[in-house]
Image (cartoon, rainbow, N blue to C red; front, top):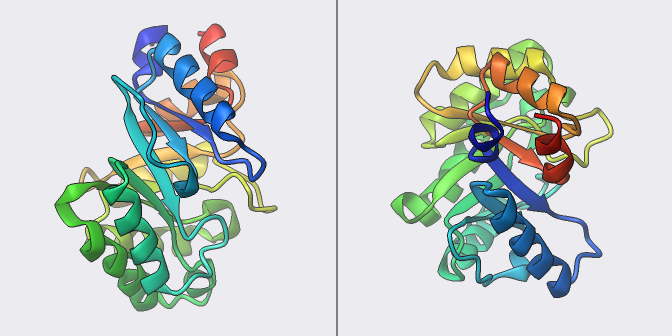
Length: 214
């Protein structure tokens, strides 16, 4: 793949708790220079002026242990503040307990809050789940209206994205949704591996280093 093609798949991400508004402005400038698809910032950083870029944010981040109505309110406020996309974290414990009806209800509550006004991506924290739980979480997310299923927050001690998880997620959603690989993707080789496994979007905090390796 060309550098430009990979850049067009990137959510250039800054979700560090210590990030400042100056850091976000620098992120936007770098994103515009690199030609990426979107920026992804914490909801408290919205609204953001980011000409030529989609603006993504997060809800229930990073633990997923927020009440579904809180996630929904966070997502709705983010969209009202200019976000085009919302990456929500599921209740990972529900997935670990194989309670996929609870996962579906969680995602559906957020989806209903934003519906067609913004694209919903659902973070399942794949490294913390078994293959069967990955499949169950993805099925629940798609049934609830998710446009994307996403591997990881990048904050969980179990780890980030893997090519195995991406391939399994892509096989599970089978074109009904797309796949975002995120968490621990720091080299061009790992980015290309995720794309080959079926990723449609990449969440990267060090996009320049990855693109320089293409």
